[in-house]
Amino acid sequence: MHRLDLCLFVVFEEAALRVSGALVRHAPTADALAFAAQIVFYGLAAYGAYLSRRDLRQAVTADDTREHSVNELMKGTTTS
Image (cartoon, rainbow, N blue to C red):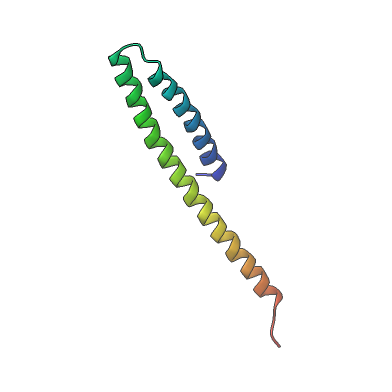
């Protein structure tokens, strides 16, 4: 999955958590509170998964970039 896609998923999950948190705070009945709390629970799981995947993807990309930079430096230095 592309880094931009993962970043967008993280942002949208954060927004969804804000909305579901507001639903929990304003739940009019115990059943509504239980339902909203379940949504928050599942939203946190999704948020954590996307956040982990985004961080892993960023780490892999940073390693690839570092490796590419080292390879470019090595190409420029030749020993005679």
